[in-house]
Amino acid sequence: MSNLDDLSIDVALEVEKDDPKIAIDFLLDNINLSKSRLKDTMNKGAVWLVRGEERQRLRRAMTDLKLGDQVEIYYDHHYLSAKGHQARLLDDKEHYCVWFKPAGMLVDGIDWGDHQAFYRQLDLALKGRESFYLQELVTEEAGLIILAHNRKTAARLNDLLEQGKFVAQLRLEIAGEMEDVAGFEEDCQLKVLKNIGIRNIQRSKLLVSQHHLETDTLRAWLKRAGHPVVGEEDVQEIDEAIYIPEIKLNLSQLEFPCPLTGEPQTYSAY
Image (cartoon, rainbow, N blue to C red; front, side):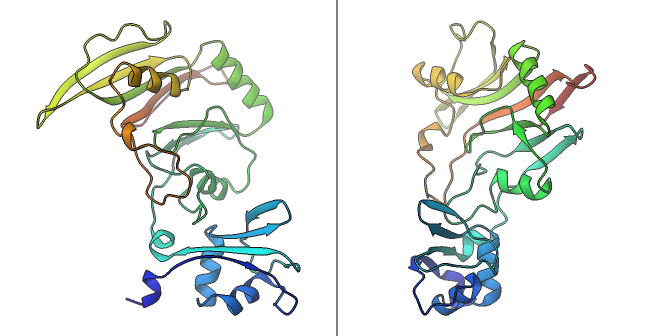
């Protein structure tokens, strides 16, 4: 194994008068990595360009730099070489599509890269197709994600959501033994599937049916009731941590009428 495989770089460099003004040349002059490794690091979103008030990922090797620019490099071989979670396409209807996001899959990425992030993977897979998301994505949760590819379809899907035409099923594992599921939102149904005991640790598996795609209210209610979703205690601000927690919550099924034809659609991912 190369010593570079255990190397970690976290540095910000300012472009000075005598520095090369092409991104890859500047990096080669300042960072002890090969050209191929630097290009891979750029492509995976771990190099940043700060120009004035703007900060964005620097991916193109031939980008022109200006005097006073700052280039930030976050290199961790193990993180950049890890395949990580992969988004999975369930169906592409041209005007909208349905994907599955695993628990613990980053949404936007972190300073150290975005190659494992949901948005980046979809951007590459969809080749820049315009996309409108119906729901807020949460890193630690698993579940089905629906997105539209034009404003008309997005508006129609949002109308169907507001009219209560969506049925979303969530499968959860919570701390403690839960028997009384009353007291949550009127338009949601909670059902205890199983109470399980593992080495004196009690847990319950729940099935929740609701007409919207949000999960934060349900998670907060369970936490107040003393039955947080398993893994909830490990969830903090994602920030720059390379370790990302996962919780036992999966938006596992979606039912809704097709916004184009009105035909019923059902998608599942367990």
